[in-house]
Structures are given as structure tokens and as C-alpha cells.
Image (cartoon, rainbow, N blue to C red; front, top):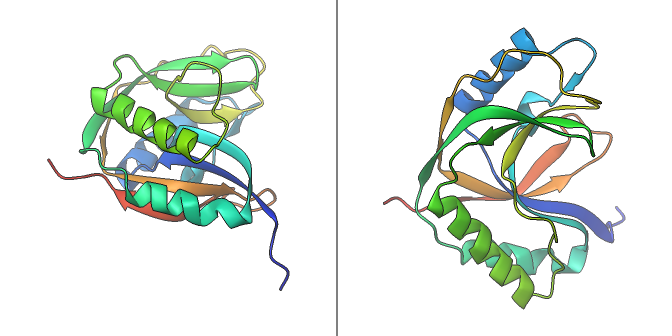
Length: 176
């Protein structure tokens, strides 16, 4: 079998089944048929998007992941937002936990040390709920969904597959 030269990768918080169930229930009840909901198994909160990565560099990313240690923390997904580009509806956090900021910054430092180019836009933690949403629809707001963040992952985007995202490796956040 031929080995792929590049892989489309990102680091993300990976929700548990309860969070996935709550988000999917909201999608089913509240989203109009005109938008494409994110597949239940693809729901995640991106920490750092890496884009196309040479397959030879994946091991460096796995080592980086093993060396990051941040305690578990709670997220509250409590409001909706819309990005006109890339046309997504998302669930966000009114209050960003310091542990999330620390995880994001620790990863950024490690990625810079490995000479990865980081996103230039400010970090806006969110979970994409639907794609191809031209304007924010008139829909009920999101009731607060608590998420005990316990796991994060190095994830590969595999276009043409359902689900689209496949965790290559997951790590547990440290118990307090």
C-alpha cells in the first residue's frame, strides 16, 4: 500500500458521548433542513489547526502530545455564533477556562519549537454545529451544555469519509 506524503491534521478536545448526545439532540430539534449538521462523531473543539503535514512529522506531533500536561477542566457551551467565512454555525464559551488557555498556549509553544506555522487569527474556541450556513438562522439559542474536558487528540481529516475526522492518538488530561 502506498503511504500518503501529506496528512491534514489538527489538535482538538474530544468530547465524551454525553456531550455529543446533547449537541446532536439540539441539532435535530433546532437546525433547519437547509443546513448541514456536523456529524455526531466529528463534533470537537479545535485547539490548533495544522493543515497539510508531511507524514514524516507525525511522530514529532505524537511526542509533543505525550509531553503536554494540563489538568482536567470544565467547559460550558452556552451560546451560538456564526462565522460568515467559512459559513459555519457554532457553539461557544462565554467564559474560557484558564486550563483551556494553558493547553492552547503549551501546544503553541511546542509547535513553534517544532517550526510549525501557527494560525494568525485570535483563538476563538468553539464547536462547529453546522456547515454551509450563509447567515445565522432564526433558531432557539443553545441551552448551556456542561463538558468535563478529559481527553484531547491529534486528529486527521479524511475527506470523503463519514465521519470525516479520525483521532490518530488521544491523551487524557491530568486528574487534579
